Amino acid sequence: MQTCQLYLISPLEVGGPFPERLERALQAGAAAAFQFRVKGLDEHEAARLAGPLQEICAAHDVAFIVNDSVSLTRRIKADGVHLGQQDGDVREARELLGRDVQIGVTCHASRHLAMEAGEAGADYVAFGAFFPSVTKETKHKAEPELLRWWQDLFELPCVAIGGITLGNCRPLIEAGADFLAVSAAVWSGDEAEAMRGFTELLGERKH
Image (cartoon, rainbow, N blue to C red; front, side):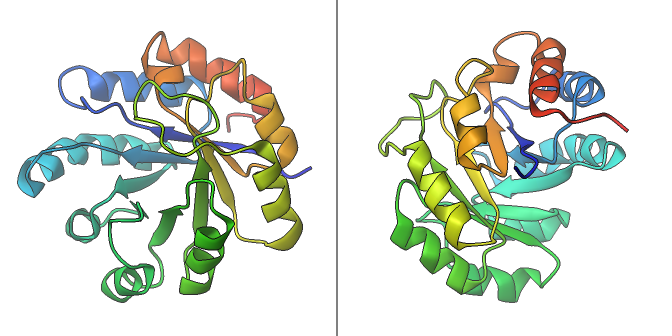
């Protein structure tokens, strides 16, 4: 079975003490990527908040992914951008950002959308929600079988998202998720303890 890694998603509030919390989390456990997800802020303010978080991620060799905004990704030279279905075209994003920037696409529970994203040149596809989420309204329900189908046919990495916790993620790992996207499972309690739990479960070792 391939190694499954953690894909951290920020809470909506990333100011105040959050940089310290992110540092604690990344010191305690391994993550492959961190998604900067804020809503309703102008780009200047978003860039200001992203700065210290980007530095923390770089220090821990964690990819810094911007949610939704190609322009912010370009402005702060982020490692990648995650596009929802309404957030723009993969090919246009690639043209603006270049070949080295990671582009991920939300594909809900749709095989068709995932295949389209792959053909357009996405670096990964995200399926979900697998469970009810406290951080986002759940409109699409995905089943572990979708991950199994994707792994059997395609080499492009897939991310499982939506309400994932330490207690419910095993079927997703077994079905072949390359990454588990988690937010509330880490940030709603002791982030260091949660990260240690996920790191132990996923069998990763801190370098």
